[in-house]
Length: 208
Image (cartoon, one colour):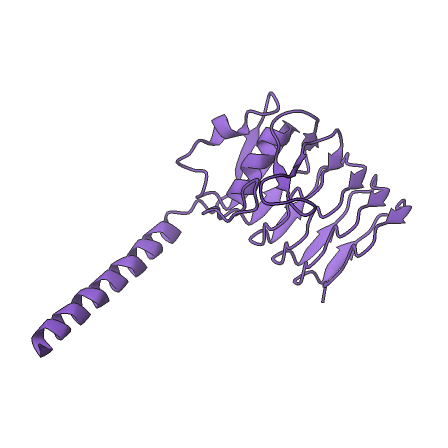
């Protein structure tokens, strides 16, 4: 009996070690240098990156127009899909300084907050607006540079982005929606442009 137990313990230990080695190999396989992708047409980011690199890129810069299809891809790369479920994405640094948000493409987020599990509000992109819940739950993002041309940040846009420590908002922003930075617990610095005329309820709730 003792021999059987010891053998079982040995196999358990081996499986644990193999699992750790697999995780170590996966982390070593990450692409850490900045990847710059110039999009000639909105909605083409998934085809430019492909499934093999989707969860390996940690630093991404996008040039050109992006719509809901592209934003959905970015969310998955940053650790959350359109339903808010976690993914294997490791994206932590995102540079959209030379990108432009345009309307069109797929739904990038399903908002269940006012509905049952089976019904939701679908979120789509609009021109020059960081839409509702655009980066919600993407807690792995540590650095984000926003498009220079955006005019507003919508409700819940950065909610639960606990990895963000600082953010500078572009000069053209005039409106910040409700709960836009809700539970951004790591945020220690935020630069607001002088032209802001409205900040929604609980915009900085639980920003400790």
